[in-house]
Length: 212
Image 1 (tube, rainbow, N blue to C red):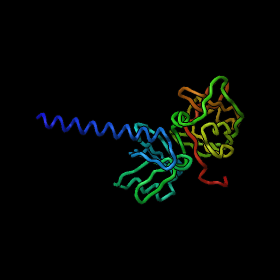
Image 2 (image 1 turned 90 degrees about the vertical axis):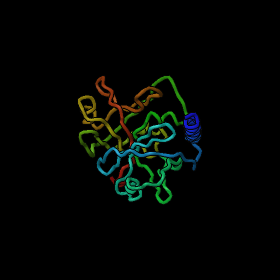
Image 3 (image 1 turned 30 degrees about the vertical axis):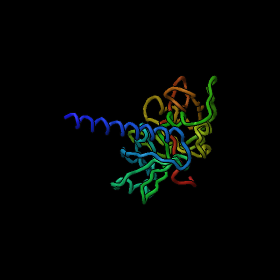
Image 4 (image 1 turned 135 degrees about the horizontal axis):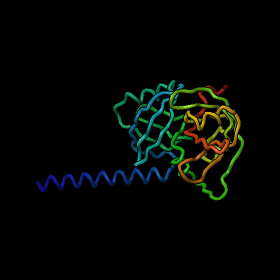
């Protein structure tokens, strides 16, 4: 019995070491490095695949392009998947597949990965948008959200932003113009302001149609 307990202890110790090594690799964020990942598929919204990526003790949430066969094929693979630090949002890779996310929902985690820090006054800037999609879970708008660049987000002058539909955000979204703020800390990262209300951005995505 003691031998069994010892074996279990050794196995748990090795697992802890592996998790610690993955976390160190993830935190270092060196280009080309990777950590083991498990994917949880959450749904499809207007051509975007919503997926949670569990890696190095973190839960990241990305949008993938539904029309990308290498991304959709990930739902069917049995081989190990890695999350690699390559490209703007990283890559999901197997031995034969490479999928590049086109959207990000884990904004707070992404903010923490940025080398630049700040404090003091909350940065704000004008934003403009038009609604392109709506369902029970999300409202997608496309427009100019320049403060997204503080997350290292490229293309912030033409990007898709995700919001939660409802009485808080709907009146603000309907205006098509407003004030965008960026928070250095806390649960919210980016949000639109209007009449005393705060409408948080759930995520950002690259437009699937670059021509609009």
